[in-house]
Length: 432
Image (cartoon, rainbow, N blue to C red; front, side, top):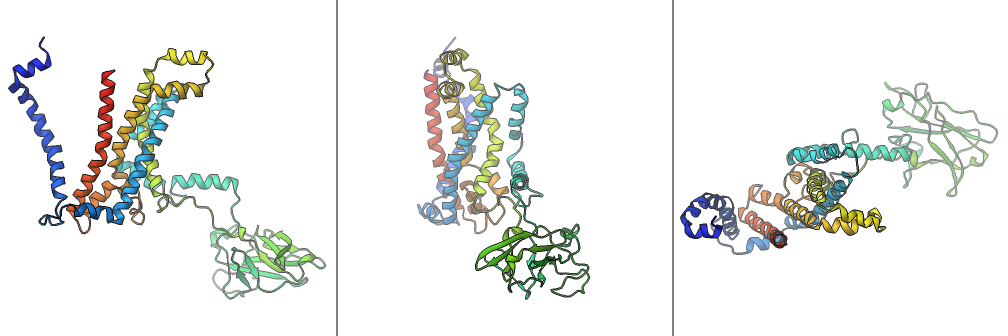
Protein backbone atom coordinates (compact mmCIF):
# COMPACT_ATOMS: atom_id res chain seq x y z
CA UNK A 1 0.00 0.00 0.00
CA UNK A 2 1.36 3.41 -0.96
CA UNK A 3 2.29 5.80 1.80
CA UNK A 4 0.55 9.16 2.26
CA UNK A 5 3.52 11.10 0.91
CA UNK A 6 3.65 8.89 -2.19
CA UNK A 7 -0.04 9.51 -2.87
CA UNK A 8 0.45 13.26 -2.58
CA UNK A 9 3.41 13.20 -5.00
CA UNK A 10 1.72 10.96 -7.56
CA UNK A 11 -1.76 12.55 -7.46
CA UNK A 12 -1.40 16.14 -6.31
CA UNK A 13 -4.48 17.34 -8.19
CA UNK A 14 -6.63 14.64 -6.66
CA UNK A 15 -5.46 15.58 -3.19
CA UNK A 16 -6.05 19.27 -3.98
CA UNK A 17 -9.62 18.56 -5.12
CA UNK A 18 -10.37 16.82 -1.84
CA UNK A 19 -8.76 19.58 0.23
CA UNK A 20 -10.20 22.51 -1.72
CA UNK A 21 -13.70 22.49 -0.14
CA UNK A 22 -12.23 22.35 3.35
CA UNK A 23 -9.70 25.10 2.54
CA UNK A 24 -12.42 27.28 1.02
CA UNK A 25 -14.58 26.85 4.10
CA UNK A 26 -11.63 27.53 6.38
CA UNK A 27 -10.77 30.66 4.43
CA UNK A 28 -14.36 31.95 4.44
CA UNK A 29 -15.04 31.28 8.13
CA UNK A 30 -11.61 31.82 9.71
CA UNK A 31 -8.96 33.47 7.54
CA UNK A 32 -11.13 36.18 5.96
CA UNK A 33 -12.79 37.35 9.25
CA UNK A 34 -9.38 37.55 10.93
CA UNK A 35 -7.85 39.47 8.05
CA UNK A 36 -10.82 41.83 7.78
CA UNK A 37 -10.78 42.48 11.55
CA UNK A 38 -7.08 43.39 11.43
CA UNK A 39 -7.67 45.71 8.46
CA UNK A 40 -10.78 47.31 10.00
CA UNK A 41 -8.98 47.95 13.31
CA UNK A 42 -6.72 50.42 11.50
CA UNK A 43 -9.61 52.72 10.47
CA UNK A 44 -11.95 55.04 12.35
CA UNK A 45 -15.62 54.48 13.20
CA UNK A 46 -16.76 55.41 9.70
CA UNK A 47 -14.24 53.06 8.08
CA UNK A 48 -12.98 55.81 5.75
CA UNK A 49 -10.07 57.44 7.58
CA UNK A 50 -6.89 55.48 8.31
CA UNK A 51 -5.91 55.94 11.97
CA UNK A 52 -3.12 53.33 12.25
CA UNK A 53 -2.84 52.17 15.88
CA UNK A 54 -5.10 54.86 17.41
CA UNK A 55 -7.83 52.30 18.13
CA UNK A 56 -5.39 50.19 20.12
CA UNK A 57 -4.26 53.25 22.07
CA UNK A 58 -7.90 54.09 22.76
CA UNK A 59 -8.45 50.53 23.93
CA UNK A 60 -5.87 50.84 26.72
CA UNK A 61 -6.92 54.35 27.74
CA UNK A 62 -10.66 53.56 27.98
CA UNK A 63 -11.80 52.86 31.57
CA UNK A 64 -14.47 50.36 30.52
CA UNK A 65 -12.02 48.36 28.44
CA UNK A 66 -9.44 48.38 31.23
CA UNK A 67 -12.10 47.04 33.59
CA UNK A 68 -12.94 44.34 31.03
CA UNK A 69 -9.25 43.42 30.71
CA UNK A 70 -8.86 43.19 34.48
CA UNK A 71 -11.93 40.97 34.75
CA UNK A 72 -10.64 38.77 31.94
CA UNK A 73 -7.42 38.24 33.90
CA UNK A 74 -9.48 37.25 36.95
CA UNK A 75 -11.51 34.87 34.82
CA UNK A 76 -8.52 33.22 33.18
CA UNK A 77 -6.82 32.62 36.54
CA UNK A 78 -9.74 31.67 38.76
CA UNK A 79 -12.37 29.94 36.61
CA UNK A 80 -10.19 27.24 34.91
CA UNK A 81 -8.31 26.54 38.15
CA UNK A 82 -11.42 26.10 40.29
CA UNK A 83 -13.26 24.13 37.60
CA UNK A 84 -10.33 21.77 37.01
CA UNK A 85 -9.81 21.27 40.75
CA UNK A 86 -13.49 20.42 41.27
CA UNK A 87 -13.45 18.14 38.23
CA UNK A 88 -10.45 16.30 39.68
CA UNK A 89 -12.14 15.91 43.07
CA UNK A 90 -15.36 14.68 41.49
CA UNK A 91 -13.49 12.25 39.23
CA UNK A 92 -11.67 10.73 42.20
CA UNK A 93 -14.87 10.57 44.25
CA UNK A 94 -16.74 8.70 41.51
CA UNK A 95 -14.31 5.80 41.96
CA UNK A 96 -15.20 5.52 45.63
CA UNK A 97 -18.98 5.87 45.78
CA UNK A 98 -21.63 3.31 44.96
CA UNK A 99 -23.82 5.48 42.76
CA UNK A 100 -21.02 6.77 40.56
CA UNK A 101 -23.10 6.82 37.36
CA UNK A 102 -25.91 8.83 38.95
CA UNK A 103 -23.37 11.22 40.48
CA UNK A 104 -21.68 11.78 37.12
CA UNK A 105 -25.06 12.36 35.49
CA UNK A 106 -26.03 15.00 38.05
CA UNK A 107 -22.70 16.83 37.83
CA UNK A 108 -22.58 16.69 34.04
CA UNK A 109 -26.23 17.66 33.54
CA UNK A 110 -25.59 21.46 33.55
CA UNK A 111 -23.57 20.99 30.35
CA UNK A 112 -26.88 20.30 28.60
CA UNK A 113 -28.10 23.79 29.57
CA UNK A 114 -27.29 26.65 27.24
CA UNK A 115 -25.32 29.62 28.52
CA UNK A 116 -28.35 31.84 28.07
CA UNK A 117 -30.57 29.52 30.13
CA UNK A 118 -27.88 29.17 32.79
CA UNK A 119 -27.63 32.96 32.98
CA UNK A 120 -31.37 33.28 33.54
CA UNK A 121 -31.28 30.55 36.19
CA UNK A 122 -28.48 32.23 38.14
CA UNK A 123 -30.01 35.66 37.76
CA UNK A 124 -32.86 34.22 39.84
CA UNK A 125 -30.53 32.29 42.17
CA UNK A 126 -28.68 35.51 43.02
CA UNK A 127 -31.77 37.64 43.66
CA UNK A 128 -31.32 39.83 46.75
CA UNK A 129 -34.75 38.98 48.21
CA UNK A 130 -34.38 35.71 50.22
CA UNK A 131 -37.95 34.83 49.28
CA UNK A 132 -36.88 34.66 45.60
CA UNK A 133 -33.12 34.09 45.51
CA UNK A 134 -31.97 30.59 46.49
CA UNK A 135 -28.45 31.72 47.45
CA UNK A 136 -29.65 34.30 49.97
CA UNK A 137 -32.43 31.99 51.19
CA UNK A 138 -29.76 29.48 52.21
CA UNK A 139 -27.52 32.15 53.72
CA UNK A 140 -30.29 33.76 55.76
CA UNK A 141 -31.46 30.35 56.98
CA UNK A 142 -27.98 29.45 58.21
CA UNK A 143 -27.44 32.92 59.68
CA UNK A 144 -30.77 32.95 61.52
CA UNK A 145 -30.10 29.46 62.88
CA UNK A 146 -27.10 30.70 64.86
CA UNK A 147 -28.09 34.36 65.39
CA UNK A 148 -31.25 35.64 67.04
CA UNK A 149 -33.30 37.96 64.86
CA UNK A 150 -34.16 41.42 66.19
CA UNK A 151 -37.55 41.82 67.84
CA UNK A 152 -38.96 44.80 65.92
CA UNK A 153 -36.67 45.86 63.05
CA UNK A 154 -39.19 48.38 61.66
CA UNK A 155 -40.00 50.20 64.91
CA UNK A 156 -39.01 53.87 65.11
CA UNK A 157 -39.55 56.71 67.61
CA UNK A 158 -42.54 58.96 67.03
CA UNK A 159 -41.35 62.23 65.41
CA UNK A 160 -41.30 64.97 68.03
CA UNK A 161 -41.84 62.43 70.81
CA UNK A 162 -39.87 61.80 74.00
CA UNK A 163 -37.53 59.26 72.39
CA UNK A 164 -34.42 60.04 70.34
CA UNK A 165 -32.25 57.82 68.16
CA UNK A 166 -28.63 57.34 69.24
CA UNK A 167 -25.62 56.89 66.97
CA UNK A 168 -25.41 53.17 67.71
CA UNK A 169 -29.06 52.61 66.70
CA UNK A 170 -30.46 52.46 70.25
CA UNK A 171 -33.46 54.54 71.38
CA UNK A 172 -33.13 56.77 74.47
CA UNK A 173 -35.75 58.59 76.56
CA UNK A 174 -34.84 62.27 76.67
CA UNK A 175 -35.83 62.68 80.36
CA UNK A 176 -34.73 60.64 83.41
CA UNK A 177 -37.30 58.25 84.88
CA UNK A 178 -38.57 58.28 88.46
CA UNK A 179 -39.98 55.58 90.69
CA UNK A 180 -43.76 55.80 90.89
CA UNK A 181 -44.05 57.58 87.52
CA UNK A 182 -44.59 55.36 84.45
CA UNK A 183 -41.80 55.42 81.83
CA UNK A 184 -43.68 55.53 78.53
CA UNK A 185 -41.70 54.72 75.37
CA UNK A 186 -43.95 55.20 72.31
CA UNK A 187 -42.80 53.77 68.97
CA UNK A 188 -44.37 53.78 65.51
CA UNK A 189 -43.86 52.37 61.97
CA UNK A 190 -44.40 48.72 62.91
CA UNK A 191 -46.42 47.06 60.10
CA UNK A 192 -49.82 45.84 61.23
CA UNK A 193 -49.21 42.20 60.15
CA UNK A 194 -46.32 42.04 62.63
CA UNK A 195 -48.70 43.09 65.41
CA UNK A 196 -51.22 40.33 64.70
CA UNK A 197 -50.16 38.25 67.73
CA UNK A 198 -49.19 41.17 69.99
CA UNK A 199 -51.14 41.73 73.21
CA UNK A 200 -52.78 45.01 74.21
CA UNK A 201 -50.28 47.39 75.75
CA UNK A 202 -50.33 47.85 79.54
CA UNK A 203 -48.25 49.41 82.31
CA UNK A 204 -46.89 46.93 84.85
CA UNK A 205 -47.42 47.44 88.55
CA UNK A 206 -44.19 48.56 90.19
CA UNK A 207 -43.04 47.75 93.71
CA UNK A 208 -41.58 50.28 96.13
CA UNK A 209 -38.74 52.21 94.52
CA UNK A 210 -39.07 50.35 91.21
CA UNK A 211 -39.51 51.97 87.80
CA UNK A 212 -42.28 50.58 85.60
CA UNK A 213 -43.03 51.48 82.02
CA UNK A 214 -44.29 50.36 78.63
CA UNK A 215 -42.91 50.10 75.13
CA UNK A 216 -45.78 50.04 72.67
CA UNK A 217 -46.97 50.82 69.17
CA UNK A 218 -48.42 54.30 69.63
CA UNK A 219 -50.91 54.15 66.80
CA UNK A 220 -54.60 53.32 66.67
CA UNK A 221 -55.98 51.82 63.47
CA UNK A 222 -58.62 54.00 61.88
CA UNK A 223 -57.37 57.13 63.63
CA UNK A 224 -58.13 58.48 67.03
CA UNK A 225 -56.22 57.85 70.21
CA UNK A 226 -53.89 60.16 72.10
CA UNK A 227 -50.26 60.53 71.07
CA UNK A 228 -47.91 59.53 73.87
CA UNK A 229 -50.63 57.74 75.85
CA UNK A 230 -51.44 54.02 75.99
CA UNK A 231 -54.84 53.67 74.30
CA UNK A 232 -56.99 50.52 74.62
CA UNK A 233 -56.50 49.29 71.06
CA UNK A 234 -52.76 49.84 70.92
CA UNK A 235 -50.35 46.88 71.13
CA UNK A 236 -47.34 46.23 73.32
CA UNK A 237 -43.94 45.38 71.83
CA UNK A 238 -42.53 42.28 73.50
CA UNK A 239 -38.95 41.07 73.79
CA UNK A 240 -37.21 44.47 73.69
CA UNK A 241 -34.13 44.86 75.89
CA UNK A 242 -34.59 47.84 78.24
CA UNK A 243 -31.56 49.36 79.96
CA UNK A 244 -31.29 52.00 82.69
CA UNK A 245 -28.30 54.24 81.92
CA UNK A 246 -26.62 56.64 84.34
CA UNK A 247 -23.45 58.56 83.42
CA UNK A 248 -22.94 56.33 80.42
CA UNK A 249 -23.09 53.13 82.51
CA UNK A 250 -25.86 50.52 82.45
CA UNK A 251 -27.11 50.17 86.03
CA UNK A 252 -30.07 47.86 85.37
CA UNK A 253 -31.57 45.88 82.52
CA UNK A 254 -34.72 43.93 81.76
CA UNK A 255 -36.91 42.84 78.86
CA UNK A 256 -40.42 43.86 77.89
CA UNK A 257 -43.22 41.38 78.57
CA UNK A 258 -45.84 40.27 76.05
CA UNK A 259 -47.88 43.39 76.70
CA UNK A 260 -44.82 45.66 76.29
CA UNK A 261 -44.52 46.40 80.01
CA UNK A 262 -41.26 46.31 81.96
CA UNK A 263 -40.09 46.82 85.53
CA UNK A 264 -36.64 48.07 86.51
CA UNK A 265 -35.20 47.78 90.02
CA UNK A 266 -34.64 50.72 92.36
CA UNK A 267 -31.19 51.38 90.85
CA UNK A 268 -32.96 52.80 87.78
CA UNK A 269 -34.51 55.68 89.75
CA UNK A 270 -33.20 58.91 88.19
CA UNK A 271 -31.52 57.12 85.26
CA UNK A 272 -32.48 57.33 81.59
CA UNK A 273 -34.21 54.45 79.85
CA UNK A 274 -32.56 53.12 76.69
CA UNK A 275 -33.85 50.47 74.29
CA UNK A 276 -30.93 48.33 73.07
CA UNK A 277 -30.00 48.64 69.39
CA UNK A 278 -30.06 44.89 68.79
CA UNK A 279 -33.85 44.95 69.21
CA UNK A 280 -34.18 47.10 66.08
CA UNK A 281 -31.45 45.96 63.70
CA UNK A 282 -32.59 45.21 60.18
CA UNK A 283 -32.94 41.51 59.35
CA UNK A 284 -30.06 39.78 57.60
CA UNK A 285 -30.83 39.60 53.87
CA UNK A 286 -27.73 37.76 52.68
CA UNK A 287 -25.09 38.93 50.22
CA UNK A 288 -25.67 41.42 47.43
CA UNK A 289 -24.57 38.92 44.78
CA UNK A 290 -25.59 41.16 41.90
CA UNK A 291 -23.90 44.23 43.34
CA UNK A 292 -20.64 45.66 41.99
CA UNK A 293 -18.41 44.14 44.70
CA UNK A 294 -19.02 40.42 44.14
CA UNK A 295 -20.65 40.25 40.72
CA UNK A 296 -17.58 38.75 38.98
CA UNK A 297 -17.07 35.94 41.56
CA UNK A 298 -20.81 35.27 41.43
CA UNK A 299 -20.76 34.82 37.64
CA UNK A 300 -17.63 32.66 37.89
CA UNK A 301 -19.61 30.47 40.29
CA UNK A 302 -22.28 29.93 37.64
CA UNK A 303 -19.59 29.09 35.08
CA UNK A 304 -18.03 26.52 37.42
CA UNK A 305 -21.49 24.98 37.95
CA UNK A 306 -21.78 24.47 34.19
CA UNK A 307 -18.27 23.28 33.34
CA UNK A 308 -17.24 21.21 36.36
CA UNK A 309 -19.00 18.22 34.76
CA UNK A 310 -16.98 18.65 31.58
CA UNK A 311 -13.74 18.65 33.56
CA UNK A 312 -14.88 15.65 35.61
CA UNK A 313 -15.63 13.51 32.53
CA UNK A 314 -12.27 14.21 30.87
CA UNK A 315 -10.31 13.65 34.07
CA UNK A 316 -12.27 10.50 34.88
CA UNK A 317 -11.35 9.13 31.44
CA UNK A 318 -7.69 9.82 32.17
CA UNK A 319 -8.02 8.33 35.64
CA UNK A 320 -9.32 5.09 34.16
CA UNK A 321 -6.01 4.65 32.34
CA UNK A 322 -3.86 5.10 35.45
CA UNK A 323 -2.12 1.77 36.29
CA UNK A 324 -3.72 0.40 39.43
CA UNK A 325 -0.55 -1.55 40.21
CA UNK A 326 1.29 1.69 40.95
CA UNK A 327 -1.41 2.88 43.33
CA UNK A 328 -1.53 -0.45 45.15
CA UNK A 329 2.27 -0.60 45.35
CA UNK A 330 2.33 2.82 46.96
CA UNK A 331 -0.28 1.76 49.52
CA UNK A 332 1.67 -1.41 50.29
CA UNK A 333 4.77 0.75 50.84
CA UNK A 334 2.88 2.67 53.52
CA UNK A 335 1.63 5.72 51.64
CA UNK A 336 -1.68 7.10 52.85
CA UNK A 337 -4.46 8.12 50.47
CA UNK A 338 -3.43 11.79 50.39
CA UNK A 339 0.14 10.87 49.50
CA UNK A 340 -1.06 8.48 46.78
CA UNK A 341 -3.27 11.21 45.36
CA UNK A 342 -0.65 13.96 45.50
CA UNK A 343 2.46 12.04 44.47
CA UNK A 344 1.08 9.47 42.02
CA UNK A 345 -2.44 10.21 40.81
CA UNK A 346 -1.96 13.92 40.07
CA UNK A 347 1.43 13.57 38.28
CA UNK A 348 0.06 10.76 36.11
CA UNK A 349 -2.97 12.89 35.27
CA UNK A 350 -0.87 15.97 34.46
CA UNK A 351 -1.38 15.68 30.65
CA UNK A 352 -5.16 15.40 31.07
CA UNK A 353 -5.25 18.26 33.57
CA UNK A 354 -3.27 20.39 31.09
CA UNK A 355 -5.82 19.63 28.35
CA UNK A 356 -8.71 20.63 30.61
CA UNK A 357 -6.97 23.80 31.82
CA UNK A 358 -6.04 24.96 28.31
CA UNK A 359 -9.52 24.23 26.97
CA UNK A 360 -11.16 26.17 29.78
CA UNK A 361 -8.72 29.08 29.45
CA UNK A 362 -9.61 29.47 25.78
CA UNK A 363 -13.27 29.16 26.69
CA UNK A 364 -13.25 31.87 29.37
CA UNK A 365 -11.40 34.32 27.15
CA UNK A 366 -14.49 34.51 24.96
CA UNK A 367 -17.11 34.31 27.74
CA UNK A 368 -20.08 36.48 26.81
CA UNK A 369 -23.51 35.02 27.52
CA UNK A 370 -23.30 34.85 31.32
CA UNK A 371 -21.89 38.38 31.56
CA UNK A 372 -24.65 39.71 29.33
CA UNK A 373 -27.54 38.01 31.16
CA UNK A 374 -26.73 37.75 34.89
CA UNK A 375 -25.68 41.28 35.99
CA UNK A 376 -28.35 43.99 36.24
CA UNK A 377 -27.70 47.21 34.34
CA UNK A 378 -26.35 48.87 37.50
CA UNK A 379 -23.43 46.44 37.84
CA UNK A 380 -22.84 45.19 34.29
CA UNK A 381 -19.98 47.66 33.85
CA UNK A 382 -18.26 46.10 36.89
CA UNK A 383 -18.66 42.60 35.41
CA UNK A 384 -17.56 43.62 31.92
CA UNK A 385 -15.19 41.38 29.89
CA UNK A 386 -13.52 41.82 26.52
CA UNK A 387 -16.03 39.77 24.53
CA UNK A 388 -18.94 41.82 25.87
CA UNK A 389 -17.00 45.06 25.39
CA UNK A 390 -16.32 44.04 21.79
CA UNK A 391 -20.07 43.69 21.20
CA UNK A 392 -20.92 46.96 22.95
CA UNK A 393 -18.20 48.91 21.16
CA UNK A 394 -19.17 47.53 17.75
CA UNK A 395 -22.96 47.53 17.96
CA UNK A 396 -23.97 49.49 21.08
CA UNK A 397 -24.63 53.20 21.49
CA UNK A 398 -22.09 55.23 19.52
CA UNK A 399 -20.94 52.11 17.65
CA UNK A 400 -17.28 52.18 16.64
CA UNK A 401 -16.41 49.07 14.67
CA UNK A 402 -12.81 50.22 14.36
CA UNK A 403 -12.43 50.05 18.14
CA UNK A 404 -14.45 46.81 18.26
CA UNK A 405 -12.14 45.25 15.66
CA UNK A 406 -9.11 46.31 17.69
CA UNK A 407 -10.57 44.54 20.74
CA UNK A 408 -11.21 41.45 18.59
CA UNK A 409 -7.61 41.43 17.36
CA UNK A 410 -6.32 41.87 20.91
CA UNK A 411 -8.53 39.01 22.08
CA UNK A 412 -7.11 36.83 19.30
CA UNK A 413 -3.58 37.70 20.42
CA UNK A 414 -4.45 36.59 23.95
CA UNK A 415 -5.71 33.24 22.68
CA UNK A 416 -2.71 32.55 20.39
CA UNK A 417 -0.15 31.82 23.17
CA UNK A 418 -2.54 29.34 24.77
CA UNK A 419 -3.09 27.65 21.42
CA UNK A 420 0.68 27.47 20.75
CA UNK A 421 1.21 25.91 24.17
CA UNK A 422 -1.49 23.34 23.45
CA UNK A 423 -0.06 22.46 20.01
CA UNK A 424 3.44 22.00 21.42
CA UNK A 425 2.12 19.86 24.23
CA UNK A 426 0.26 17.65 21.75
CA UNK A 427 3.41 17.24 19.66
CA UNK A 428 5.39 16.20 22.71
CA UNK A 429 2.69 13.68 23.57
CA UNK A 430 2.81 12.23 20.03
CA UNK A 431 6.59 11.75 20.22
CA UNK A 432 6.31 9.56 23.29
